[in-house]
Image 1 (cartoon, rainbow, N blue to C red):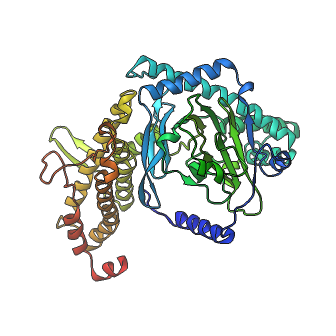
Image 2: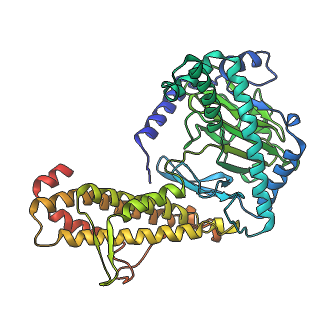
Image 3: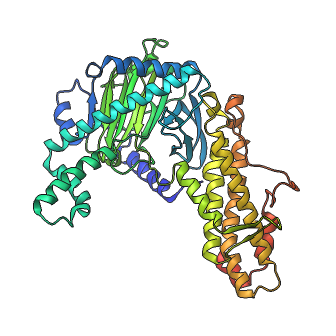
Amino acid sequence: MKRFTIHDKAKEIKRQKLLREIEDRKLPYITPKDVEFEELSKAKYSKLHLRQACCVPDDIHQKAQQGLTTLQDYKCFAQDLVQIKGKDVLTPVYRLLVGNPGHTYRYLNTRLFAIPWPAHGVEVKYSNNEIGKACQAIKDLNEYLHAEAVKILVDHYSAADEEIGSVEKATTSLSEDTESGKGVLNNQKININTVLKDRTSFNVALLNYMDPSRMKYLKEEPYFGMGKMAVSWHHDENLVERSTVAVYSYSCDDLGPALDESNKNSVEGRDPTLWHIGLKIAWDIETPGLALPLHPGDCYFMLDDLNMTHQHCVLSGMQSRYSSTHRVAERSTGTLDYIFGRCDVAMKNLQNDSVLGISSLISLEVEFVRQTEEIHNEVEFEWLRQFWFQGKRSAKQCDWWFGPMAELENAWKKMEQMTKLLLCEINKADWSLEEKTQSIRCLLPLLEERQELRKIWVARCQSRLANNLPIDEQPECHPHWHHGDAKMPLPFDLEEIISLLRSQLGPEDGDERK
């Protein structure tokens, strides 16, 4: 689990510097009613594309809006307990992740586990048929947005030749071996289309529900004076590089309580009754910001590298609002296939004698030990504890994730046994001092990390914020066991083992670790 990193600190330093530079003044921003809107949009915000509701087919609107409200009716949305700058924070926005089976999405040190939308060859038993229909509606919306995003990108690149060049450079290595110039050109065209499809093949949809009447603690937008923010300035995390983010926005007809006059008067430029997407160039105080109003059924697309070069926020309106944000989540470490593959790698170093009923490690080489223990920590803290920290939220929609989590836990228990086997080997008398020292140097930092992270997760599960959540959403500190549990190879608290290993290292090793 990542904590407040150097990268986080660097961003905070930039933010504080920006606030000092602008002091008490507010930076300028524009909306569509300003005469310079079109010119500035083309010059600085050309990769933000709005598709107005009237240009979206009626059947897409009907299914998407009914699906979103159905999921809300069945209480599928929930607040996330995330970490910002090392502190737990409850999101004012209620969220739900839907997507390809076995996919996850990680943001703000929190891994969300996608409720599977219907997929060929995958059996999903939804807790209610209506929830299944709603997930299918989100999948249909996903397919529509994917097709539209490809069209928009093709048009965008056709209008800007230099953009085509940048895509061709990314695919040149795939077509260098072609013999003829004509072949190179044809291959590049095929590859460009492939790249565009890959960057728009949305595998998850992060659904958001925002109700201003229940969001009493919204922050004021700090740089431009745009009013209340439902979501602060940020870049979307954990995405395939240069992939498109597509958003379907639906603000309901139910008019919330009367707008606070003080808030209304504090907003200059935009209509505070309407929801807006705010956009700015990251860390730039020279270019005016953008506030784009969102009407029910509007879609917008953040194309190519816009999410990298710009930051965006969501500015609150008066009505409750849903958004379905479709993303190409980074898949290299965020799917069940990936983590089960990692478990398979670890298990290759374990052999079981079915006759004698005993287990042993195949290799005691440092590289195999380190690899196994790193996988051990990854399964425990990036998957098991992340899943159970969200309580039994997914059970409201389906029980699909509980089977894979049980399999992962079984693999993790075997890794606990592998750690115990290694500790037994280290304590054998026939080991040379050099062999023992090398193994301890390898194992100790990973056990120390495990011990520290277990303490952090226990504290998070017992926090005031966690205990104030609804019962079925409260974090579970799992896996957890008491001292002397015969079913577990090692104790939950590793302090005694760590102290013993430290005592077996020489003074020079202790100095090295300080």
